Image (cartoon, rainbow, N blue to C red; front, side, top):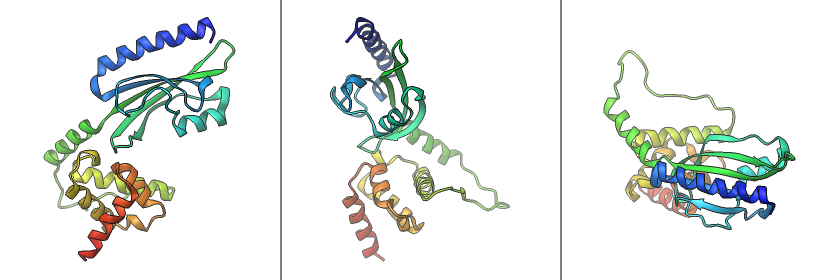
Length: 215
């Protein structure tokens, strides 16, 4: 490691500490050194994703790095999901050396679960309907993936609570709502729903079995 690179990472670690302390327990800052790919995580502040140094970079960042190389662009404010089903807002900025080579990444993950729950409660409290207009939404998706994402987001919004904070009964109700909309007719739906809810696909199958057994 050159002196300049060492100094860069040392400064970024200090910045990471300040950011994590400023935004509290919902904020996590991760620093990656691409000389160590794929297990490139060298420093982390916060515990949103429960990772430790030596953990790998995300598939999204790795794909962008491999396809774009020196032309890779930063990702800001994109939505991700933790392994526990928490909704995160993430940003990734790439680090370059003086030759323009990508040497690492500085990543921020913010857990929005509590905020989305609060937003759901406010929306329910302020919701009104106009008898002269048909209620409901019908987004026009360009792919099956977008259709599944749209159905999932609307169902979660209507429930007023994020899956990571739901009880078992509430999770079953969410799956039942998705089932009634035909969501599970879409290929890969079970895996998508399982990841969004922070459970295994076998749990979703068990919920569906229970729902269908009740008619």
